[in-house]
Length: 142
Image (cartoon, one colour):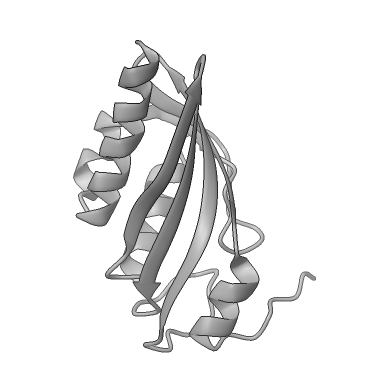
């Protein structure tokens, strides 16, 4: 794949998230994708766990939206700076009780692409802003 194709893959992945097309995730993610991005401490990052984690997060933050503000690609990596928004609207095993409040924050994702699919995801987002906007207490780690 070319760098342009890598960027298009990431753009299409975010479009699928925006449309909550969970069934289409396999079009963008490798079956053994590793997602190192954690909304809450303790989510698994073993190969393939991203499919269930993404579906759960989309349901818990519906309607979730990601606006791509910047895409940078080099080699097998694509970096996306996004503004994401949603509502604390559903249950999630690692999130506090839904508050019905909305959020908007920035995030940066680094995607590794292999064989036409995203094989690895790393993300950093404004989690303090997320928790404050949603009215959640800051989590503690046992």
